[in-house]
Image (cartoon, rainbow, N blue to C red; front, side):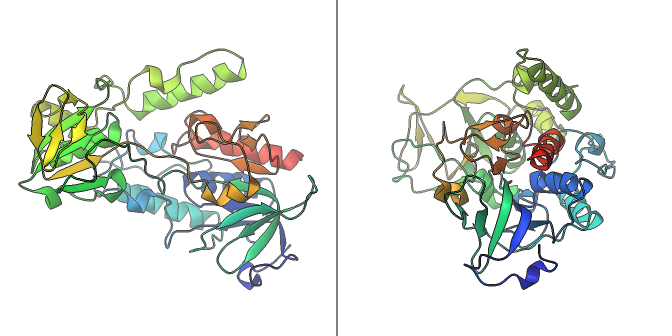
Length: 374
């Protein structure tokens, strides 16, 4: 054990030992740390949290300025402490900055002693013993742990699809991660690609200042106006219970893809919430469909999702299926081929709704229970 993580010696040392290293201090890492602390492990001594970001809040500080949650604060909370209410004309849907403030205060409330900026470059085995330790290396230090919880999320790995002509298009191409405010597109012609919540919200914003076209690979599925994150949370919980009992359940995917937050409703009222089929290629000055139709544009925003950020796990040589590390065990988060490793918060493959504020708690709790029993 170490009493002062700041005193950890330089990279390569093998005598610095902790029980658990949590990689990432976003919502998944914080939830896991809450349950580790409740299990009696002391932050900074028995378990250590390493985060690559300069400030608290996980990926939230890097999202676009106008982002809002899909549900009131009470349905968007991490375990142990409810998110403080947010009350305004949007029925209490918290803003991005409100979420960042909550996560910052959550970290302080439980004295989690997150070490940042500490980007984990690799997780590797100390030796060939299956009961040995794992080495977690950053740029200048190495920790030795009995267990590692990877909670790095997906924001650092935006997915860019490949279409003919992408290299030839002379306009601007950016991903969801690059978008901040609509004013940067004032007076322009903009194509928004994607059929999820990010695309709908960004389209709603940009369409107030620019001429927009929305394209999707399939017709977008809108939830009823009176359905928000509260219904999604209830459905996610029902799926968890169904799977635990061996029953099938479609989860939130069976409800639809796009929550009708106020900005999206406004876009619908203005007549801009109409999706065109996906174009087939990019041209020098725009996009083109298979029937010969072309549309000139200044910018294309790819709201096409993310992949799990797992580069740091490469030294373990774990097999992947569709980019996912197979998980097993009672927790549903334990790496099948490396039982000392757990993956929390990457999406349904690591637990139903585990990539959400409200949904990550059960996965984190199950993970800590598995660690405690090992």
